[in-house]
Image (cartoon, rainbow, N blue to C red; front, top):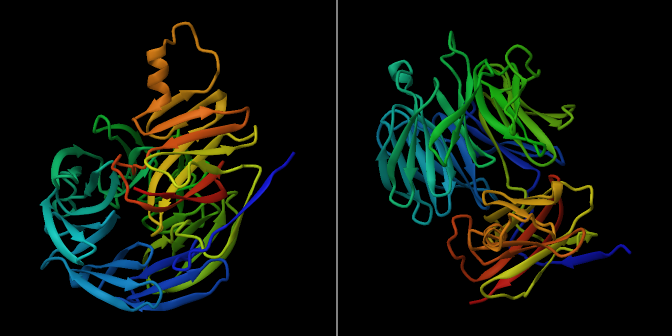
Length: 464
């Protein structure tokens, strides 16, 4: 018998921004806001500073890197008004920004530093020396990975600086291929887009294993590689620095799907993706750029014209809260108990037998992701991302003793995966974030994805 459960949530202060993007137009020095559902485009949503380059988004604000002004421009996402300009340092030429918790990190491309900004104070509170001409960054497990392009020294010493965010110091430097300009965390590995020298040295993708802090794989994809976007089916799309093509490879086995010899076209300089679509930003110098919207069958769905020489595109997070919506949960029976809870709760759900991969994402009331729990349901094995595999079979091999069983079923001390029925699973959460730090009391939302599709959202309350 099918069960249709409908949960009604009312959270007046939040909004759902799952199909909105923002584009930095460096030539026009404006920020574009695009609603990809309605097609509404505002190419002057905000007026930017000198030489705007990159943007990072939170629930309420956009933070734009204005390289020419040596500053970060904080913009209200409701009004487009500038809240404050956060000065970095003279001649710092800030390039990229990444946000982790209450802090932002900015690369100073000309003076070889990474700056730490307290987002509650809107001011720089620290800096650390890294390699030559730092560019893109990625964060994983309290470590910041910084791509040092060393372009001013003809790419002689390209590397990744690994910064321990607990002490804000460089702990390791890892040599890379030429021009490590863009970084992304994909399947708990650091993928590094090494774009080459724009001439005789072609682009490559380096895979860095955080466990060993070594480059384990190199994908010789060719071209001038740019940033990354990942599909729900583990295809990694890579922008083309020249803006003509698009490259792609498999995130699991690193096989090349589209390389420089067989690129996907039309392409673009920057890419972004959500669960439904791939967005490709490109154009010709001196002309307005366009965003091409594809589905993951790689059919062109729509195009949106932005402004001059666009250099970055970012999408609002898929889940930033719930607003007076009825969220149907059909067949999946998503629930948790106890609720309210202290200190732990069990999240239970049912999935069809044809499902193979499940993700549970936990968000706080601000819409910030607290925890990501990925579960593989194939071959009767559950794989919680970053924590190992848990066998749900009722029988165990003779060599599988009780100590091993406890090791596999209790994961990092804060998750426990069990199979309650043929299609029903449960995960225990003890109220810690992705770094295993205890979270504060309050309302949390948990979102269930099955094979890359959002199928349900529910809420829970932690009380201490």
